[in-house]
Structure formats: C-alpha cells, structure tokens
Image (cartoon, rainbow, N blue to C red; front, top):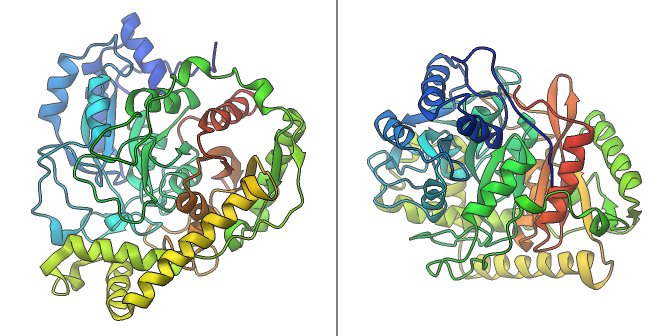
Length: 473
C-alpha cells in the first residue's frame, strides 16, 4: 500500500535531511546519501543550532555505528536523538536533575536496544523536563529549550528536546515518553506526529519501576509511516515488564487499509475534555478539522456527557513519591538545585502523603477507569474522542507555566487535563498536526479504545495526504 511520500531530497548535501526517516533510509539505499554524510550534517546542525535541544552528545559511538550501518535494516543508518529520561548504557542517567548528575546508565532500555537492532545511530540525549514532571523543557541542568517555530517559545515537555530536534531539522526521529501528555503536548506545540500507544505496547524494561502505571514510551516524528515503523521495531512483550503487550502484526505495511473500519464510527467532539479550558481561537481551527474528518469518514457525532473525574492532585502526589525515592538521601538538601515546580511539589507531597492520601489515589484511579469505560464501552459506546492536544499555542520557553492555559502534569493545568485521561485508562491517543494559530502549530488530539492504534494512524494518514503539514518548522 503506497503511503505519502516525504522524499526530503536536499539541494545542499551539507544540510540535514529535511524529509522523514523512511525516505532517508531510501536515500541511503539508492546511494543518494550515506549514513556518515548524514551524521556529519547532523552534528554540524546541532553545533550551529540555538534550540538547546541536546544535553549530551556521543560522537565516537555515533560514527562507529554510522560507518558500519546496515542500510537494509528498517532504520539502517538513521541518526536519532534519545530523550534523556531513556537509558543508554554508558550515557548520563540523570533524569535531567543536577542532584543526579553523577549517575551513568549501566544498561540500555529495551526500546533503545530494539532501535539499535533496527539500525539507528544514537547521536546523543535530547533535553527533557526534570523527572518528566512539567510541560516546559527548562531545567537547572540545561536551561531552556526553544521551539523551532519561534525562538523564545517552549516546545513543551517533557519530551521537549526531542520535539525541538525533529521539528527543527536536526534529526528525523527521537525517542519520547508520555506519562501525562509528554508525547502529545510537544508534538502539538511543534507540528509533529505524536502517538501515545495503548499502555504496555513498548516494554518499559529492564529495571524500570512502574510507578503510576501511566507512562508509555514512543517517538515524535515527521510522518505517520515513521511512527508506524518505529512501533513495528520496538513493540512486543518483554518478561521483565509483566504489563507489556504481546507482539502484533506490523503496522506500516497496512497503513491506508482501514478505510472501511473507519467509516461510521461514533465520535464525541469535546473542547473541554478533562475539564480543560481551550483557547477559542485555537479551537476554531481544530473544530473545523474535526468537522472535515466527520464528513469524510461519515462519522456519527454524539452529544453526550463526557465528564471525567479529576485525578490530577492524586496523580501528582504519587508521582512525587517516585521522584522522592529516586533522590533518596539527597532530599531535602538538594532542594535548591531542583526546578521550582519539582522542589515545591516534593515539599508539598511530603507534608500531605499518608494512608488516607494513598487510599484517595486508588479510589480516584478507580473512578476515572469506571468513567472512561462508560464513555467508550458500557454506556455511550464512543469510538473516538476528538479534542485538542494543548489548551493554546506554545508559551514562553523560560516559563512561567501559564495560569490560564498551561500547568504542571497532573496538577490544575489544562495540558494535563486534556491528555491525562488517556494515561490513566491506558487508551491510545494521537496528536495530529492541524494548522497554525498566530504562526505556531496546533495539534488535534484523538483518543480511541484500547488496542486501536491502527485506526488512529489511518486517520492521521488521511490528514497527512489531504492537508499535508510542514515536516520541519
């Protein structure tokens, strides 16, 4: 099945590849470009970039991989960035936190290992928010990362460096993770594809504590087929993660084949999903996209109550407990070198957590799960919830988090409200580039039932074909 072409051929061979990763592999195979040439261009672009998207580079390892790259592999020779919250053996394992700056990873994550088996060239670590806890990538360790669409704006968090690097033309792909929106939020802010898969699709192993049972890993990409190929090479059960899902048939070869399955789905269009407040100017653009999709696929629009119980504060408390465990005896002496949001969250949590708080966390989780089951299955039978990826366009790179349209993951902020329900219930959800407002990208978020990622990819593929988005800023 033919899919959208993103050839990305460059008139200037010294520049990085401006197409998607799949077309870069094709260029390697045709002899138009070599992995070493692309790596040369990548490091030159990073050196001249003012995005602050990378915090650690490993040129020795990367060049060794590029010189020996097998271009017949799915991502053979493709340079990628690795979010600094993902482990690579021998690289810093700091959680973007100064207090943990002496820690070096003694293992690589399963996702990274599988990517290397698929031929990628690991070039370095992209910046992230500290412990993945905030919607802005700005840390004591690295400073602020900038949005390539407008310097001075944030690419979001926590996968902000990955999004900035991909949308900024530095690399075609980068790893990302989503525990409360950290794939979809940056993707929406930077005009990229961001799929949060069903919980467990990619194993979180080895040695990873499951914590809130909300976090999934994946990528931010320039194209639907890149995302499909990514999951084809990284998904599948690992016994060290008992909640990881078994392998499924490859997704990329079947892109574009779900036309019949998409026709007539039951959808709810919800501007205030999770109790969020969305910018009217942005929602005007997104609702027009939603209307086009409804007409194109003959979807049945449902007018129902989609209220979801709030679990933000409870989730935040349990997340802070995980951070406290990682810091160990360093807390509270390290408080002054943490980002303000994390330091405040830890101090507040230590005062509030006890048996009652623990019971409240689990009761809230149960309430959200019951309500999501009602919306998608038991009462309303919704197939898709269509909403925004973010409450507004990207805010300032240095912060503060906007009082009206921003916020901390899991707290009162709107970003967490829009993306969080899918994390709690484990649903797949995707951010699809859907135009701009005031020159900045906006993303349409579509949430679906468990195990239906291929439907989301085909919806995104239709948008990619009919309203193509810029692959780089």
